[in-house]
Amino acid sequence: MIIHIDCNSFYASVELAEHPEFVGRPVVVANNNEAGGGIILALTKEAKKIGLRRGDPIFKVKDKLKANDVAVFAADLYKYRNVSRRIMKEVVRQEIVLDFLQYSVDEFFGRIPDDDPVCVRQCMEQVVQLIKDSCNVPVSCGCSSTYTLAKTATWFAKRYEAYGGICIITPDVVEKALKNIAIEDVWGIGRRSAPRLKHIGISTAYDFANLGESLVDSLMTTARVHTWRELHGIPSIDLSAPDHQQSIMHSRTFAFMETDLVRLHELLSNYAADAAVNLRRENCLCRTVTVFICTNPHRTDLPQYSNAQTAKLPTATSNTQEIVRVAIALLDKLFVKGYKYKRMGIVLGSLVEDEGWQLDLFDHVNTSQNRRLMEVADRLNVKYGRHTVRLTVQGNTPAKPPIDEGD
Image (cartoon, rainbow, N blue to C red):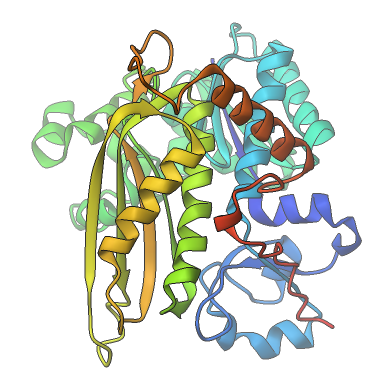
């Protein structure tokens, strides 16, 4: 049986785990922008009850936030990724679920080696409790014979309290389940394909499953055919990840437009350092570094500029100092004074596995001493917080505290 785990209101749940004094109070997580607000990315059920929705611009609902004593936290994607990794580590360590993999920052798939619904439910309850105990993050859990049906089971678990956060779709209830889920809510269909299907009378997953496979093949892509087969209980989706990523990117849209090269150096250095950490976590080295920068295309009243530069490294590396040095040199070539920059990023490309990669005889970057230095820095940053150990060029900007609109 395939198990699917979906963390409930993940960003908001992580913030509540860290700040339990806000439990029971409406809480939202938002990004930042130049208007001083941004949009709501995640919210608790208490926030939903007062009419707030994901995607609401903060400036439009500011009065509602204040009137209802809503706590607004600034999004911290780095923190959320770390919690996600901790969930992975704990579940894998307990060996309750086999072939456990991360599908997104707040979703996971795995396999329970049993078909008996009673035993499957017991395993699911153990996993849910384990995640609650280790990370204090509530989850919804679905289980069935295929990935798509498992996601469908989670859809029911999230929306109907009677399931207690756990739903199993066995073969005898598949038809009933498919009749009660709209076509746009089926994993693999989405809201772009749904209108076309509704136009020909397909409004539920059951309607879609009742189409002939050849008709689905003629109307839609191969991925949708795989969805159709999975709804019939035929495993057709392969989520197995490659040995390592082909590239690693870190980029951000700035809260405020930037014009100062020194400040851009600081921001890019932090992106490069984070990318280097991920590179080492993958046990990989990069052979190219790409930096890109652009202005705000939505500000048509301002002059526009975007550009990118790539450097090929003489020796593949995962050394933060070397990657930052190359990145800053590329930014210096890209920077043009007089523009207001809105977005910047770095891509580490042409990745190779660290094991067995032939180093240059005169390589001073990847020496055992430098590698040990990176390992120590990574351990300290995990223990004491991100960028506790950092390069001088990364600056000394403190972490942003939560924004509490209720005070």
